[in-house]
Image 1 (cartoon, helix red, strand yellow):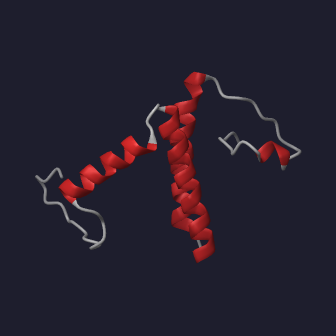
Image 2 (image 1 turned 90 degrees about the vertical axis):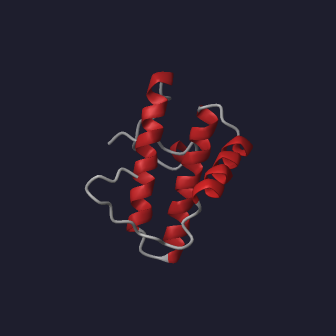
Length: 103
């Protein structure tokens, strides 16, 4: 199984091979890792595990931002802009789309 791992994992794993990804492989690997970590959030079975998995998602997001050359302040400004325009998820609203609705 090939997957993107944290930088210090080679220090802890003996029976595996590691290589640095080529530039063209990095973004697809980050996207795949984001999905992998998000699935682990869904499958978390305790509060401690949930926090750990959310931390992994956060770490992947930070790495992705850096990879794309986007600083955290710019990112957070965009997050706030969208929150101001469309709100957050604090009210836990669920929408059922009609046949012709696209939002």
